Amino acid sequence: MILPIIAYGAPVLRAVCKDITPDYPKLDKLIKDMWETMYASSGVGLAAPQVNRDIRLFVIDSTQVFTGMDDAERSKYSDAPGTRQVFINAHIKALDGEAWAYNEGCLSIPKIREDIYRNEKVTIGYMDEQFEPHTATFNGITARVILHEYDHIEGKLFIDYLKPFKRRLMKGKLDDISKGKVNVDYKMSFAK
Image 1 (cartoon, rainbow, N blue to C red):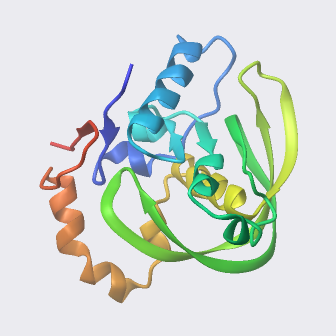
Image 2 (cartoon, helix red, strand yellow; image 1 turned 90 degrees about the horizontal axis):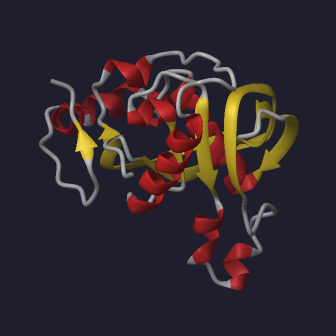
Image 3 (spheres, rainbow, N blue to C red; image 1 turned 180 degrees about the vertical axis):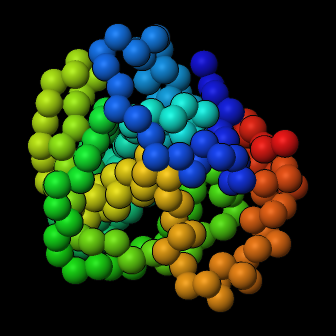
């Protein structure tokens, strides 16, 4: 089932999310619905707060980023062809490498894209959908997608990385989004 994406301005997007246990109600269905919602919205990642759940869960599919690239462009990224994965109860262990810029957007903040600097590598501890523990290091675009979604479960948004002046310039657009004055081709839910 495609779930509505929660728009900028909703308190759940600023919540530091809680770890969950394997008996979280209807977790398998929620994960399936999150995949369906992410793909229907043309996203490469989706965090639980974006579907109105304050839990430490996100899904990513960085393979989609590489799909439209030619071989020469793809060869610039060491993580090609990307990964498709579920992260439960994720906690960052280390950030490494140089910070590099990439133009990011967010399903909860449609029609706004900005260059955001993030570390090249992230080492993260997490559970998979069978609640098997993992610690893994990701790099490149995959690390970036993970860090973007991880920020969501920490109550942060990509626009928080912008300089205050840049944020002031986009205040009108952000206010419009929070009031539902934005046209998107996916289902959204706006703060009242």
